[in-house]
Every structure is written in structure tokens, then in C-alpha cells.
Length: 251
Ligand SMILES: Nc1ncnc2c1ncn2[C@@H]1O[C@H](COP(=O)(O)OP(=O)(O)OP(=O)(O)O)[C@@H](O)[C@H]1O
Image 1 (cartoon, protein in one colour):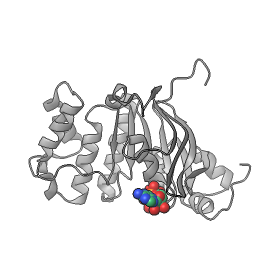
Image 2 (cartoon, rainbow, N blue to C red):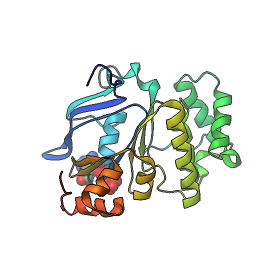
Image 3 (cartoon, rainbow, N blue to C red):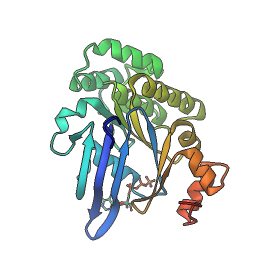
């Protein structure tokens, strides 16, 4: 990294996960610049959730290092946890608490200064008002997703990890949730790592795409350069080329 380039929001080196004899991720090496959105693409089982799980601290890496704003996440996590957050369909919020109570708990965990004002702001921007005092376990899948995104934004993170954030949303809701994420990126110079199967979403949001295949990066470029290099009209076709082993030109 040159002296003038900003410190990466996230960098991973030699990151890998092995279950028994089977390597499912890595070794991975990549860095995310502040304020950029990077798509993590790959077929079922390619290693997206495992990668995000390791960065979130939910899955212990077999080898490698993870640095967030220059701090070693595995050794020094409390120095940076307040600057990051995540949304994942695999992590449920307590069912018996209301949405407001859940957001309050997370607001306290992250030491948010004016929790009520923050919850009100998130309630407005993610349209939670209708069910904010309902038990979280009684929400529909799409409502739960909006609550999970509110939880992910509660501490104004500068690094956000999103695992298929719009998978259970209808097209209209998905569209304004994407706009909300774009606004968050712009106002907080937030780096986002986004695992998604929605190629339209990736084309719209991402500056860069990491294509994972069998746990390793098979390609890494901007959406525009991937389209040009593979000679394709959309990312879905590029995805199929990578998945089926048709290499992009000039890679
Ligand atoms: N606890 C585990 N023990 C053994 N293998 C696992 C475990 N967790 C995940 N795997 C395997 O690791 C591989 C990567 O899984 P992962 O969930 O990261 O893929 P993914 O890219 O997120 O897939 P999808 O798009 O289907 O969500 C898969 O082959 C999966 O079966």
C-alpha cells in the first residue's frame, strides 16, 4: 500500500477454513477500501457465508489474518467492533423481545449515545413503525430482514457485512432498502462486503466484485470491466461463465 492510500477498512491475508480434511475457503487475500462496496459472488457452497462468518467472528478461521482498520480482529477485536456491524439471515434476534427492545439492547451494546433518536430514525427510514412494538418472533420474513438491517445500522458502522440482505424482500422493498444502504455508504464512508445471488443488485451497488469458486477468488474486478472482459451484457452471464469455467479474456 502506498503511503498516501487510506488504510483498508478490511483486509484478509491467507484466510482459510477447513472442516476435517476438506478445505471450504481459501486461502483468500483481499482488501476493501473505505467507502467502497464489494460484491462477494459465487454459486451455492462457494464459501460466501463462511467468509463473512469468519470476518464477523462467528466462525474461527483455520489459518490467516483479518484486519479491520489496521487492527487484528482475532487478537484485538474490542478495538474495532464498534466500527463494524453485520446482517445475516443465519443470526436471529431474540423472538420474545419487541423490535424496539431488540434495537435498544443492540444500541446499548454498541454504546449508541441517543438510542431513542437512533431507533426513531431507523424506524422512519426502514418503515418499521407498523410493527416496532410487536414481538420480533411474530414478524414476516421480510419484516425480520428490515429489522436485521436496522440492527446492522444502529452504530453507524464504517464496515458493514451483508449476507444476502434483500433475499426475502419484495422487489419494491428491496429497491428502497438498497437505496438506504447506498445512503449509509455515502454519509458514513462505509465499506460494504455484500454476499448476493442477485446480479442486478450487485451491478447497482458494487464498485468491485469478487467471484468465489470452490472457496478461492476466481476473478476480481469492477462490474464494468468484468462485462467488457467477458464480452457479456450482464453480470448473470459473467457469473455463468465463471461457474462453468469459461475464463474471461485477458485475465
Ligand atoms: N460446519 C460445517 N461443517 C462442514 N462443512 C461445512 C460447514 N459449514 C459449511 N460447510 C461447507 O462449506 C462450504 C461453503 O459453505 P458456505 O455456506 O460458505 O457457502 P455459500 O457460498 O454461502 O453458499 P450458498 O450460496 O448456498 O449460501 C459448503 O460446501 C458447505 O457445505
